[in-house]
Image (cartoon, rainbow, N blue to C red; front, side, top):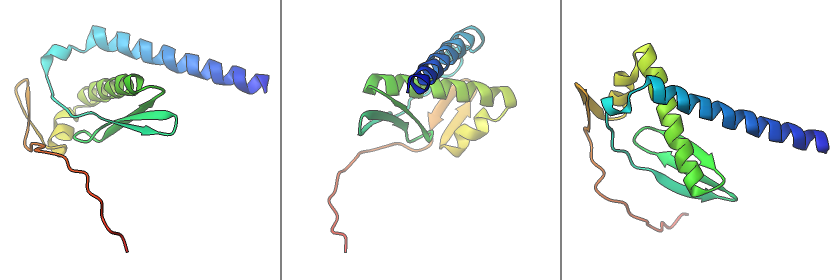
Length: 123
């Protein structure tokens, strides 16, 4: 039991350290001011976990709190965008997600106009 707990704590520490290093690397090498993108973040609770989703980008992350899930999602987006930019696929990915890239501007080709909750009769 002690070994499993120790490995779990070490794993959690390594993940946190990795994310901090990624954040530091991105702050130095990726200029966020180059492109701005407005996205929707959905927050869901599933048991003891919170999920943050970006439907426009098809990314999801989790956390122990809603804020942690949101921050994790933003971190995932930063890392993925940086890696896509490095291999030259970011503009293609954004176009697939419904965005148009012109110079340093990212504009949605579609607009979310509302949300509804409905109850459907099933069977």
